[in-house]
Each structure stands twice: as C-alpha cells, then as structure tokens.
Image (tube, rainbow, N blue to C red; front, side):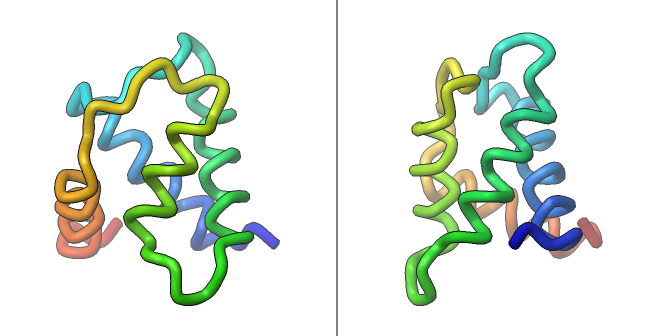
Length: 86
C-alpha cells in the first residue's frame, strides 16, 4: 500500500533528480514516475537497500528516458531531503 509518506518521498526525490538533471523523464510524465516509484517502494522487501531499490525502480520505469545519478548521488539527495525537511 502506498502511504502519503512514500508518495511525498518519491515526489521529493524524483523532483530533485529531475531538477539536477540526473534523471530524464518523458515530458508530462512526472506524476507517473512518482507513482511508479512510490508503488515499487511500497512493495520492496525488507532488508533491501532503499537506494538500490530507488535506482532499480527508476531504471525499470517506462517513462524514464535516462538515469544519470549513481547510488551515491541518490543517497546524497535522500540525506539532503531529510536535512531540508523533505
């Protein structure tokens, strides 16, 4: 089940990756990519790395054209989101 927290997390992270030009998505498909990531995160197995789950999910999403961010970069965005309050 996708919680409001997961949706907000996915939106914040995808937005940051797009704005930093580390994620290229099809025009007008931001909501679809956010929903895809939120659903994948909700289904992720316990014990699996959050960062690798995000990477794999974005790579599998049909509306993602390219992911330039590596796991370290994604991790830095996650940390910065926490420091910035979301």
